[in-house]
Length: 162
Image 1 (cartoon, rainbow, N blue to C red):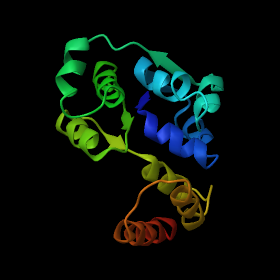
Image 2: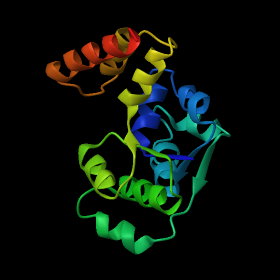
Image 3: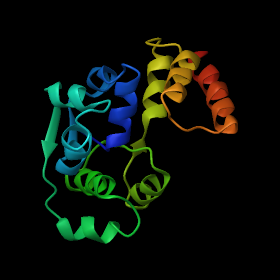
């Protein structure tokens, strides 16, 4: 079982790659706040229709509201709920892109990846051309510095050549 925050869902939807999550993981759990961010409040934005219609994305309530609130000084509600839901469900993996959220999740012992990690996995499996996909992602507003971009291209070449 994996848990996702909103950013990977939105980013993958923007480039038509949301189905990669179903292909690799079968089912994805998201907390109610992530559903609300993407579908309810984001109803006219990328990801809203895709997430709403994806029967393989399951919405769950977080039980430990106090733990969520304790993280709210550092990260937003959706990230906090995703992290706590991942802990509560003993998730195999948490999909999260935000650096502060990733640091907290790692400190709590969660295994993490993000949008880029999913794309690297798909590139390794020859499901996509990494450079083209990253270029599409950046064109849709995904932020990567030139240095990060170059490192990712080098990393993808290493992964895809194995």
